[in-house]
Image 1: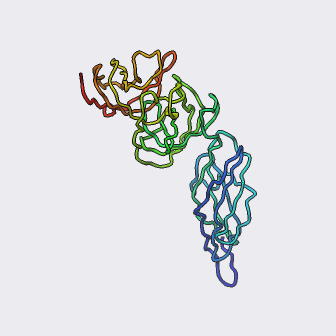
Image 2: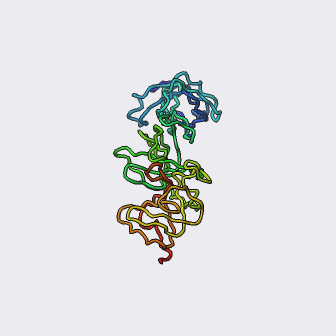
Image 3: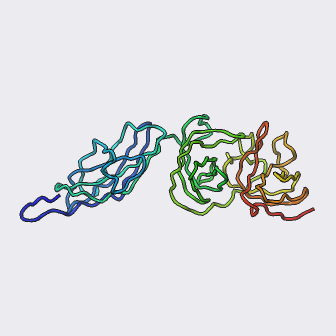
Length: 308
């Protein structure tokens, strides 16, 4: 818009907001904050805050719902906040902010921020509950990815929808329904938000008795979903799995002593008595009851140190 004042036409938009941020999520509301932008050395005239469930572009901006009320712009650099209420639990929301000057010039869009209206997953989350889990992808199998927290305090299986493409090392925020299969927790009916790409972390070295963690009455951390490494002697061998025994006390009632290692198709099983070094996902194997297992990704995860 052009408004003539004292012989000139104002067509200079105010600065955009580069630091929109999510400060807090609580129930059905989210609090956003940002630094007030500069408008030719003064405060901007107004804000236009919009919300979307499928992201933003300049061409789609006008079709996205506006959020109100929003504060009057402060002096440049002043930190401002707004709380958006009435959001639906279990959905992702994107937010974007533009500033407006008195001539109606719109700034560029701010950075996009998002909020997932679901609680962070914990072992106490009931099956059927809605939860979020953030971390780094350590392995991808058919229809299933494993994600571990960056601090390696836990991991989780995440079901992939048709068309979902993830690579190991992807940083993601996943939201879905907590389900259980073969004694293993996972997120089903999942929405996955990619956050970037990193390197696959090094495996966590552990005793065979710690695979699965407390979920199977084992020792150590909640290791299900973590990329782990175990080593020992093969105590049982078949085309589908082997058992690796490192001398630690594993659950009773298994086929053999040690921890089960699941072999993907095409990976040859080493003979009983072989010493091996195994990298894979701390997971579970079907059975009654299910048993803890290491799920290797490919032949490179199974290193034979010596044979009988």
